[in-house]
Amino acid sequence: MTRITAVRGDLTAEVVDAIVNAANSSLLGGGGVDGAIHRAAGPRLLEACREVRRTAYPDGLPTGYAVATPGFDLPARFVIHTVGPNRHAGQTDSALLASCFRESLRIAREAGARSIAFPAVSAGVYGWAAGEVARIAVETVRAETGDGDAIELVRFVLFSQPLLSAFDAALTD
Figure 1 (cartoon, helix red, strand yellow):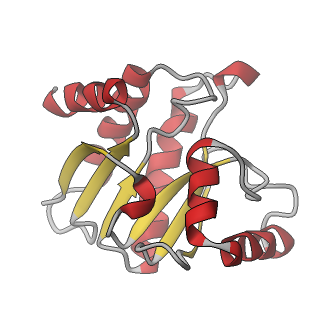
Figure 2 (cartoon, rainbow, N blue to C red; figure 1 turned 90 degrees about the vertical axis):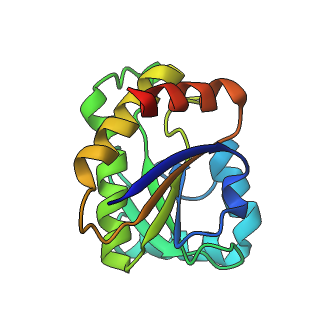
């Protein structure tokens, strides 16, 4: 059975097989979680992301998709980049947000990961409410994992107490 937890902490310090980056479609770094992951992983992450752009996604990674790169200087072996929907840009379809979590899990399995840590995708500058992100994230992860799943641990790593409270509430529902 997959264990699902939520903690307050620094995603870049997580000792798991894969961490998820709440990336922008350019994959070339940014603010928030994205910037922190790029800084912690070192310059080779940007090189790897440029290669992904050159070979697989020349127009950028579409919203709801996910792609993996090595973790480089991070404790995690992989970074799974996903682009969450931007509510401020009119992307209000919860299916797009659910796809971020579902596709990240799929990519993690393909990479051989057994543990994965997620941020609150789209809850920051992309304008989604913490409670809504938590509900969608937890529902999607529960639906996509279970007995016999290759993913043994899913950890939501949140940078603030309000986000942690929202995820704790979703996990107890």
